[in-house]
Length: 155
Image 1: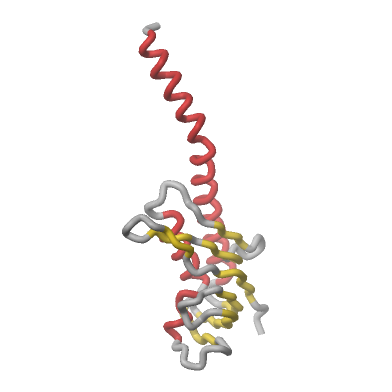
Image 2: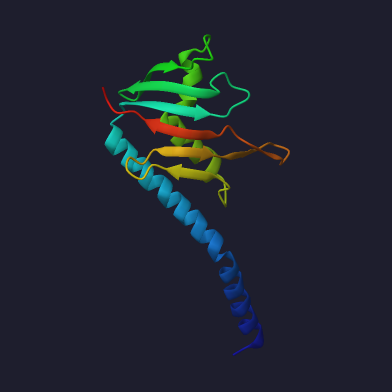
């Protein structure tokens, strides 16, 4: 066999071996996202009440938020420390919006997700969301972290 061919095959094998943990991480992250999103939509049918804790320093919905979603639409949002919040302020806190955010910030257009997402094992919703965004100048900053999500039992 040609020495050049052996070097090319060996180098290709080494590159694949080095990249395999990253490839596995990306594939398993995407699989967890898709399977949990499917489970959530099947279980919730667009109707739920939730308590979402946010660590945001910039948004009025920092702290504890209670939301009610009916037929996939935000019906009500409450944050005791924000008397001036409008329904639009709570839209990014719906489970559907959290899934969209995970997709946008962790899956679409990224080779390797640098996010930490914990899913509820029974219902599939994101129970904790830590994502990171990159600005145009290449600097990244932590995005708003959703520290806890609790789905409330139906009335």
